[in-house]
Length: 111
Image 1 (cartoon, rainbow, N blue to C red):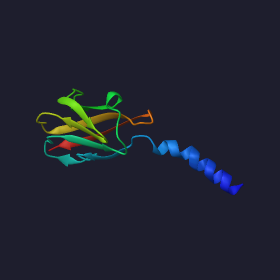
Image 2 (image 1 turned 30 degrees about the vertical axis):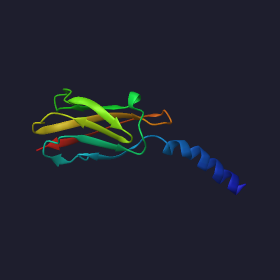
Image 3 (image 1 turned 90 degrees about the vertical axis):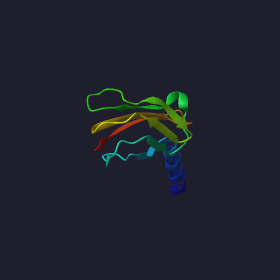
């Protein structure tokens, strides 16, 4: 019986690990940096480009994302123009091969 319960819990938990989670961002959340040429988000699995994306907003809520977001496997890259000093907000959504949508956001500051 104990082994059956363990297997059941393992099977139920597995789909949660299949979602495309944000693993790392450059710049990192809450960091203070010089104006970045690129904002790179690394996810735990390859993304479905048609259903994934991100926005970069300035402290006044204006979209300053720049060129269209590029998605290559687990990487999502934004290429804004030169960013002036201030706080910026990255809002992202990801869909992996399991088709579950994940959403998140973080801020960073340009010195």
